[in-house]
Amino acid sequence: MAAARGKIDLHLHTLKSDGRLTPTELVRLAHARGVRWMALTDHDTTAGVGEATEVGRGMGIEVIPGVELGTDSTSGDVHMLGLFLDIADPEFQATMARFREGRVERVYTIVRNLAAVGVEITSDRVFEIAGEASVGRPHVAQALLEKGHVSAMPEAFDKYLAHGGPGDVPRDKLSTAQAIEMIHRVGGLAVLAHPFESEKDVFPLVPGMAAEGLDGIETYYQGYDRDRVRFLLDLCTRHGLVPTGGSDFHGFPLAGHKAVVNEPGSVDVPFQVREGLEARLAARRA
Image (cartoon, rainbow, N blue to C red; front, side, top):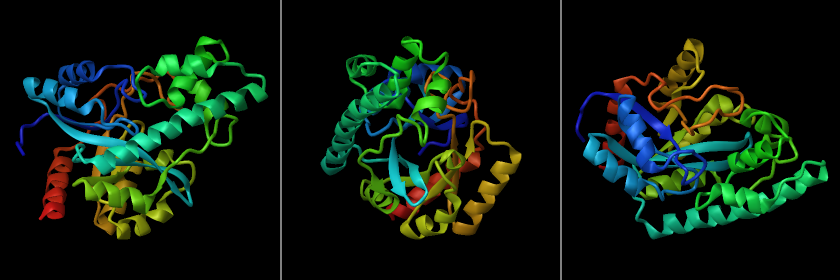
């Protein structure tokens, strides 16, 4: 891989899942923000990777094929990033298709649950908002915003869609071990995403996940102060994991971040992250 300098952002979303921008728009924005090494990590889909890769190639940006998966654990829903994936693998794509079908069924259940507490939206409108995307809670949140049930997207998550809320509906997921195994099978690296945002304390699970083959932890992330970064760096060192980082850009504020829209490249990810990931990838593929 080339070693051109530039900002690094390994957690980005497009409207192929629950972001606001097309893959082309995302790459152009990332380029304008100084990003030169980025991963497209839409939820349960790699549909935007081809377009992003082509556009990035013409702009001097290396686009890493990735995905974000929800996994089941004793700490609830734990998100896993897969990076450097062989997205042409048919078995992998069949699994992603199954997960997207589960997302559709979940929308119907969420809408019914919200109606039971007097909050009326329609599943048809949620699907209209999602379009061809992998439908998810942000599309439900937008429908809630349109109907005036909330005044901002983060409020929709905090009030209705977060853990324990009426819109908290489980869906088909892999275990952490299964997700790691699948990511490795298609040539990728498995990274624990935004660990402080997990439903429950995920850190007691890290030794077990490391033993299962976890490759890294998202250490540099929006809102993570020096103490959190130091804690995660120490965790990576103790378990032989690579620290990674990214903005988790969607194009709208995320739950808990109020009016903040974190732009691509807004999280300071040191160049050593790239070096560590390239070394880990070479070792995995040796």
